[in-house]
Length: 212
Image 1: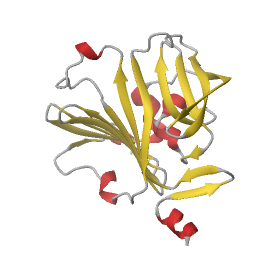
Image 2: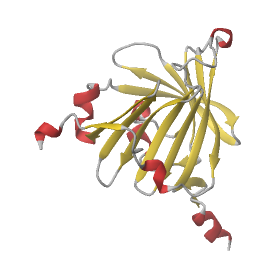
Image 3: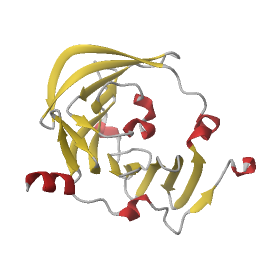
Image 4: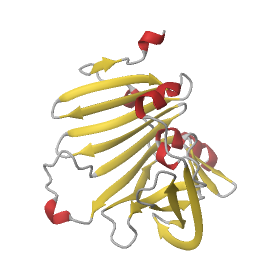
């Protein structure tokens, strides 16, 4: 019946929450200075996707016209894979999650201040929070919902680790945001396992193999 259909499409309702067990989330990326951003600019992400299925997750940004950058994570093996396809240069870097600090450095400590402000995004009631980092820089305004749960989402979206909710929208500079990332939709279709594979035409690096 209905429960079977919800499970088969990767959605479960638990205590009023939509717990997504398999699917794709799509975010749109808009910019304040649209007039100076050309469609052919391969440094500008115009769409961001997040796929997940069982223990596997992948996030990817599309860089017009044909480039992309993405990260994959397998919670069973604790392996992170970074992939880039930029100007025809296709490369994958494979590391263990424990080696991420060696590659990217120690992340700044984050704190979140939560507010009572609300708005609706994609049909979900969202709440406002502001994220601060110990190293300064621009604060990030976040709109989040408690009605969607994606297990281990913040392993990949490590910038928001510690946030009490699911990110629906975020931007810096609340008065005149330069870039706004907003939840657009999620797909109820099954995720093809091949989305978590490294394409055969990629060069693969294992930067920390010397430890093994």
